[in-house]
Image (cartoon, rainbow, N blue to C red; front, side, top):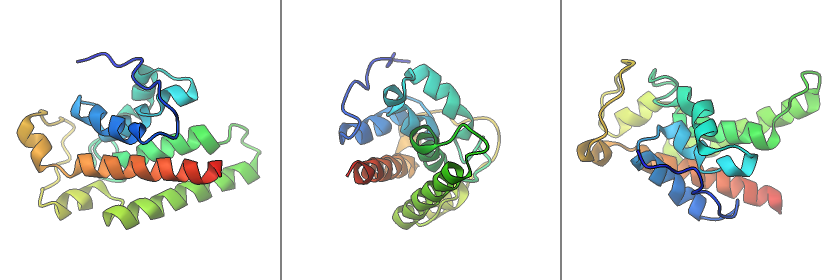
Length: 166
């Protein structure tokens, strides 16, 4: 697989981040990794480090077809940007949860659902929950709604942080 350690040296608020997320998926990264890794450098992480953080969330969390991995990638970024580390910081904890809920609302509005299995069924695909990932072939990419969903998740994150920037 192509090395991408220094591919994200672009502005945090650039539309190129959205395109990068889709590109990462086409390189073989899972949906969660694709969204989160497009902003890895903004949080002092390498793509490899961020890929490790996000790796378990692909396929609707470990291919269980639960919460969409692209949405989980957004939530990882929300934690890095707005999260809390002090377990006693209730104000920041609650603010983070409110942000995640807002992002989930926007994601659902854009995609029709937050659940991976439902998103696949809506695209006419029977969701499988085997722990074995599918081979990435041209046919795989043609039939999957995932690139558009990844693009939507990355766009939602970009728009959100732009709004917060002011």
